[in-house]
Amino acid sequence: MEWWIYLLVCIGALFAGFIDAVVGGGGLIQVPLLMILFPELSHVQVIASNRFASLAGTSVAAFQYIKMIGVDTSVVMATGITAAIASFSGTFVMELIRPEVFKPLLLCIIVVLAVYTFIKKDFGHIHAVKYSGNKFLVVCAAIGAVIGFYNGFIGPGTGSLFVFAFVSVAGLNFLHASASSKIVNAIADVASLIGFLMNGAVVFKIALPMMVFNMLGAYIGSKAAILKGNVFIRYVFLLVIGILIIRLGRDVILSWSN
Image (cartoon, rainbow, N blue to C red; front, side, top):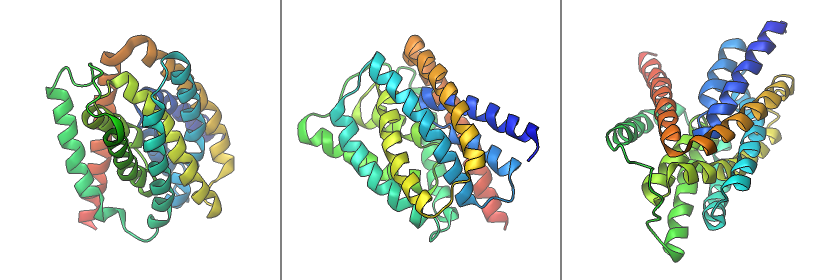
């Protein structure tokens, strides 16, 4: 493999780690890059190699958030457990169900949440948890189950969907939602990565160098998010959601044309 291909992969992983640490969605950068540079890989190998690299970066970002602002452990546990189970299951469903069945509905949902976030200027600025006690845990568990399955089944944009769900459904602000989503995402990624490793899908000669640069980007991104706060995270969130809409829209159009 040419040295410049490794260079492009590492630069992409660095930027993906930064974006993912701020608001999630680093896979929207890494996955298309892998598909372009390594067309010989299957879609399962691409997702698996991306997952291996991004897990390290997500873990770095999660550690920074825990150290600097702290997290609600009840949110993490309730969401993380169901997300892990659903994410692990999703890796096997990926090979049984065509993503084209799921993507049009997902695209409509994401367009709605993007418009809502753009119009509602104060969305995610106030930290006001909407539920308490067992009801709050049930809500978090439901968030984990739905988005965790998406994480294992398709993957890219999972962190951003977690952030939106934590803000809109649970009532967290963007900063605390990003912090919680990093930890839950890491838990879900571990579960789905086990499934990919069992299938022998990770291409280590690609995933290992990506992992190093993804970790560096995650460190820088988490520091920036903590220092700049909710307004900065909201803008990055809208950017990532816009990219996700373009990505899914392209996939839907291509599936309809085939």
